[in-house]
Image (cartoon, rainbow, N blue to C red; front, side, top):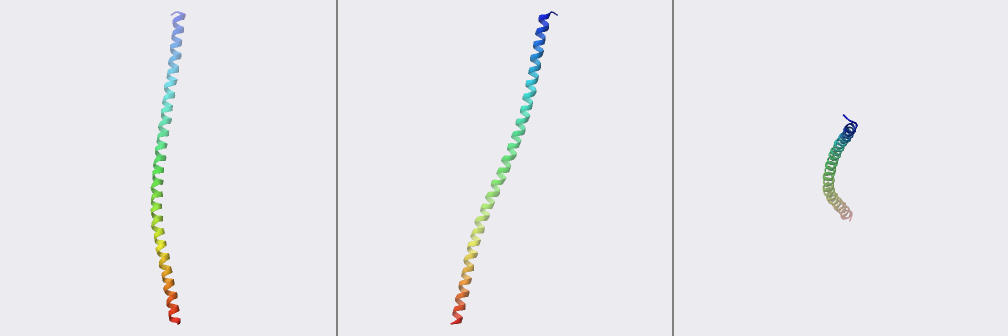
Length: 91
């Protein structure tokens, strides 16, 4: 082999080395992207679960506020009846 062919083979080897490095970097980036996508899916699921929890809490709050409103009215009706009865019997 002459010097020109050796130089040419060295350049081809260097290019193959660079190509191998680029392929390995692409593989690492793909792994990182998969990891990021899995993490995003997990976060989306957690957000969906939290939205469901908030919806349930909102429904419970509405039901509880109605119950409290009715209980408060009943309390005041009972107090009014008690006071009225007391005043009626005192007369």
